[in-house]
Image 1 (cartoon, rainbow, N blue to C red):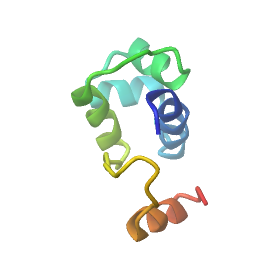
Image 2 (image 1 turned 135 degrees about the vertical axis):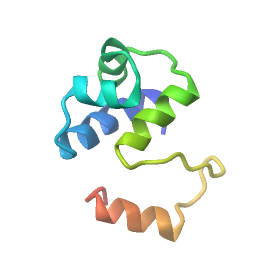
Image 3 (image 1 turned 180 degrees about the vertical axis):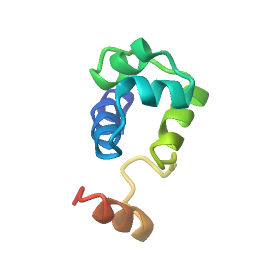
Length: 85
């Protein structure tokens, strides 16, 4: 998943968590404008620490695997729990 693809996913997870953009930005210590640009695919890059904090507030974490690699069982279970089939 690229940063551009991650933005709408973060928006979906934020809304699912019942958080406003301001609440998520406050909890993650990230400027609301930055979060808005991320969610709307207008942010060309974002530091790892900031993105990690946003994901952590949403109960998400980074996972690294080989490009084009198949998802792990854990990945599939997590996606199934979120209804991402």
